[in-house]
Image (cartoon, rainbow, N blue to C red; front, side):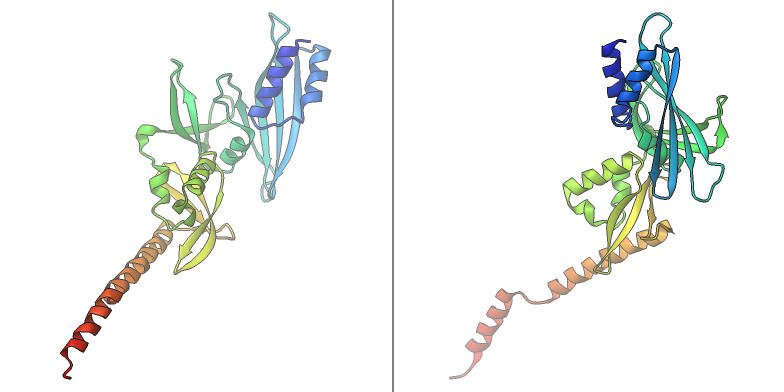
Length: 262
């Protein structure tokens, strides 16, 4: 067995979101020297269960093994047949991780740095199209490139989200959304804080907003909350402007005293 090859595969599994649970199984499979082998991982995300079958193949010219792909079956609570998709592994750090695969199969979008045929890196959002399949039986991936014009930060700032006021929280929120996560945030409406959820929506250049029960809130309603919050801040500012300053009060008081007869 090639020890360097084992270490490389272990790192590759870790990077792609499979952790270190396969270290011993991987070593045993490689020691057997079989041409191909599979490993299986099962996980639960909320009420969804997911099974991933990892495919390894030995080179025809050497003793090296390659992690080529993994097939995911996502079993949702209300769907007995489940969804299936195969994700292929690249050696240039552009592969879709296990969590990103789950998010894509949930219908959300993921931001990735990919490479074109010339090896040039480009950034884009990807989303699974459940209405079209390719010749391998996989759902096609829709790509929204940088020139498509989706600005995640600008889309977020159209809403009254408290985390945007703190640079570190804002950065964490944007990074989470780029991974395709459904992220909990704090909306401030009418002076009250409200826990809601958001996800990136590059197709329509917006974000999707959900209430605390994960029910979708339409875009107009969410923007109205932002406008309402802005109007309240403006009204408060106007009220403060209408009130005389302490300096003005003191000046008026002195004027009245000066006008009094002795």
